[in-house]
Image (tube, rainbow, N blue to C red):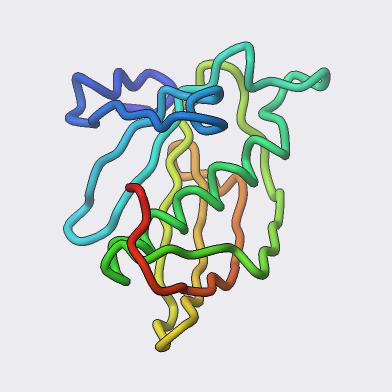
Length: 142
């Protein structure tokens, strides 16, 4: 089934939200391919810019959020913060598309997580990013 026709719930995705900023863009969807965390979003009118495509700021938010979730899974839910983030907007996503973010841990150090992620619609890459998260003592809210 094409992701643009995807009903996330019917395909086994779990809807979730978080209070605050993430709640404003959701609902987001969570799934797994083996050990790989997947974060999805069905693009709606509120996600689209004046050019008729997904807003770049939305895409960056999703990438940052997905990489942070993957980092927290790996680091035992420690408090963390993004300290470096680079994004490449390489394609377009439009209203009705189901965008899937695949975060990946490149390296886990004592106090840093090196991450990358790719966002796709069907087999098309729409956006990619890399970043570094610093880890603090204490447990996060997730």
